[in-house]
Length: 69
Image (cartoon, rainbow, N blue to C red; front, top):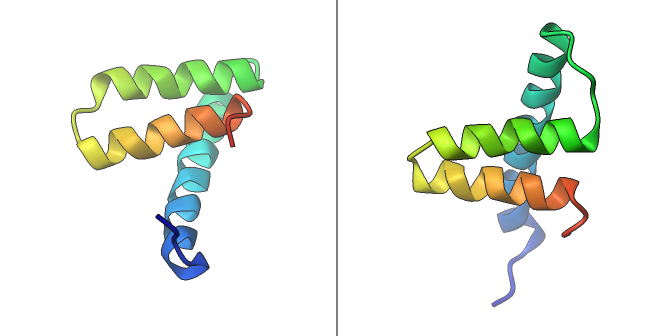
């Protein structure tokens, strides 16, 4: 299945927003900022979120941070 750039862009924008929000939260708490801490923070969000669409976006963000994309 192929998606056009117009179909994918909003998804990547949301993934980028999730990562950006995580960066802001970690900085606000004074935690060390690294790919691992970002991925851990998002993983915690993943375990507490029950919205399927949001879980997919969070998982995508985690995979992107870990080099899966």
